[in-house]
Amino acid sequence: MLRNYRFPPRYGPEWGSGGIFGLRYHNGVLYFTVAFEAQAHFVREDGDSERVYEFELVGERPTSGGDTYNAVEAVDGSIYFGGWVHAPAVYKNRRISFVNKYSHVHEYDTENDEVKLIWKESLHHETDWAGEVSDIIYDPYGDRLLLAREDGHANLGVYSLDRRTGKAEPLLNEPSPKGTLVHDTVFFGVGNNFVSGVGEFKALDLITNRWESFKPGRSVDGKPYIRPGLGAMASAYNRAFAFVRGGLFIGNPFMGDEFAFARLFEFYTFYAPFRVNAINVGGGILTAFNAHHDATYRSDTGESIEWATTNVIVGPSVLVYVAPPMVKIVGAFGARITSIEKMDGKILLGTNSTPNTGAKEATPFDTGNKDIVVLDEKIIQERPPAVSFSLPLFLPGMAGRYGAGVFGGIPLDGYRRPRMILHASKDNRLTVYEYDLSLPLGEAHQEIFEIKAGKNVIDLSSFSGIVSFELEKEDMKGKARIELL
Image (cartoon, rainbow, N blue to C red; front, side, top):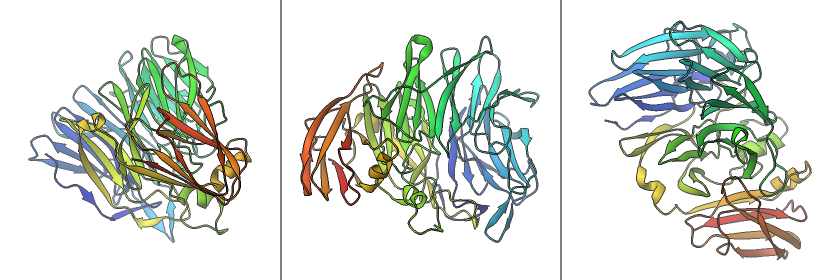
């Protein structure tokens, strides 16, 4: 069915690179959007036909954009896909004009091979745009589409969209990038992803149409977390799982389990589950933490903190399978994984070699090399791949000045010889926190190691589950390397 899908840099004015988003296999059709080229692909199961739609129903060509958050849903014989698009794109002097930027939702009829524009919205402003559609969730009780919108300058929050008339109504006026259905409620993460991250969870009762609010709670290792930007959400075990920069929140207050935080892949960089989705596979959840999804390309002040936190690469992007109490790494990849789907016993991954960049760094073409990787579904049952992480200790050292500093959150499940090589510039003490994702989330156990200036090798094979680390004194010149074998 699938040909060799590889997409080198091509026309698509925007900020750096987009990716392959929205992978969804439904009713014999595989859909995905290639951004920033603004090309929606519909591949039929027989392999005899493929339709490419360039968002010409939104506005004039040439178009760019499409989707960068995996806004897709399937209902009956239709695939609903959303996001944003420039129609037409206007590029000049390394800048993008947003006067023609639209948020959108389309419907693809899988039976009749037809694309229909359901809804679009634009501010028609040179620098500002209406909230992008970053998630679409079907309400099976109200037969409506719920749209999450966080990225933009106006019309942010949660909207209800009538999938037949195209009428959109605001339900919540606070920015929300993602949501997930749990029982008869949809939980939405609320907050600004590029500032402070998730500030609370809002729950919409689908029966009464009423909202309730819940604050994120404690950390399993008992230490503070900072800037938990929300990347993906999914549900399992009658709980909401919110994957954020630095870890994940799990909970469902309606069943007595308050939201708590488990540290996972915290390096105090932009290493995060951003611009990727989470899907259910085998009763668990499959998602990814990305090494390089959004970044500053040029730094006006040399080695600035913003440049360092978005461009220091501490490890590969990892595909992770969550089946509490276990978290297992099941794949290691390059700059980023942009979309995940399962089809015919296979796992499909959209991948990209290059990140999004900033407002002053626009290019007239997409700068990334994108492709679709096909894996066997049995990877979730196999031994994990060898992975290593290399962290300059000035990053947790800087975070320590803001009340944080615990780093790691490394899953050890499936590894036989995990270890840390710590190059310390001074004598120190290292606390190792050991925990897992048993539900409800519990508390961590800890063990302390004496560290000498120079090279220290710490055998982690006596630990299990997940481990995070804390230095007693900041070490701005040291380096930690974690090897999982």
